[in-house]
Amino acid sequence: MSDRYSSKTTNSGNQNRRSSFQMSSTTFEAIRGDLYKLTGIYYTDNKKYLLESRIQRRIDELKLSSFEDYHKLINSFNGRDELNKLFDAITINETYFFRAEFQFEAFENVLAPEIIKKTASYKKTMRIWSAASSSGEEAYTIAMIIDYKLKSRFPDVNFEIIASDINETVIESAKKGEYKDYAIRNIPPDYMRKYFTKKGSLYTISDKIKKMVEFKKINLYDPISVRKAGRIDIAWCCNVLIYFDIPSKQKVVKSLYEAINSNGYLFIGYSESLHGITNDFKLVHLPKAMAYQKIEKR
Ligand SMILES: C[S@@+](CC[C@H](N)C(=O)[O-])C[C@H]1O[C@@H](n2cnc3c(N)ncnc32)[C@H](O)[C@@H]1O
Image 1: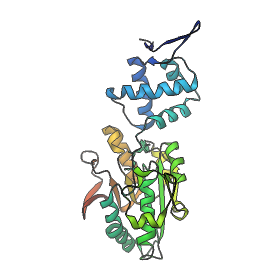
Image 2 (image 1 turned 30 degrees about the vertical axis):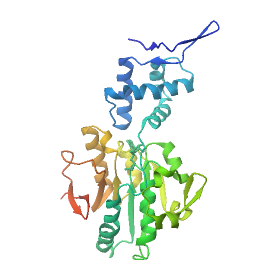
Image 3 (image 1 turned 180 degrees about the vertical axis):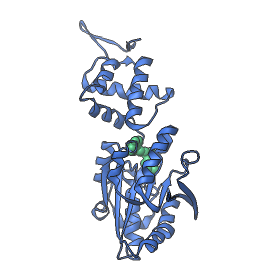
Image 4 (image 1 turned 180 degrees about the horizontal axis):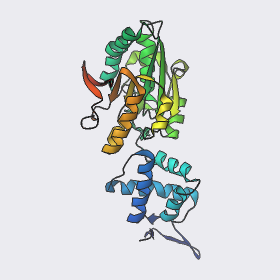
């Protein structure tokens, strides 16, 4: 079945102008297959409407005339860029500062001191990764905790924070460090006073904190891309695994395992679990939070 013009088709003089199409199920299947190959995320049938409306916007911008043409474009020689743009348009980027507050508490009070103690004799750098960082709130939360609470306790330690996402638009927004009310609503008042300035309706994070985080584009579904993160002591990979199906989760978690140092830790979202996905991590109970610790294979 080919794509159909919808009832919204308009007449302007003697020209037919198409303001909206419908995506055939064949084209939907083909495009979701392309997205799956790129990202490991499988758009279920109930997401057809979302895909359709977002692709419609891309079609309008590119002045194409059907979903089939769009499908041809993303499969053409130069189509990868457009597929990335489509993915940028459909990812769910919701996040806010101090979202997983008990994980951050456990990091400050238990995990960071433990790792520093264990590795003090041979290494003075701790590497932390926010692996699906969206607009940067998680990574900047970690940076503020390090600056406020950990640097004075561990003055010899060099903390490196990598933040990454597949979506270039959110990475650019993270680098700006400007946030609305929604993002800052969970920030403790002393952190707010210390690290933010308000201009109009926007809150800007201080340059000092911005400089502590290095942003990179990394596709978690692509093991070669994940290598850009380097060696990691603690990774946060929160609220992204839920979008992958089981084989994709297994592939992503294997790459995370390879990036994390021996006995290093992984945090995932509160509603996520590695049960049935891997046996390579041990679940560790921390005060009010849980983390996965890498088990070294012999
Ligand atoms: C809901 S946000 C989570 C933000 C933050 N980690 C948190 O928990 O608040 C999910 C992020 O995962 C990113 N994402 C989705 N698929 C990805 C992939 N294959 N590789 C890297 N990032 C991906 C999206 O672009 C989005 O910014």
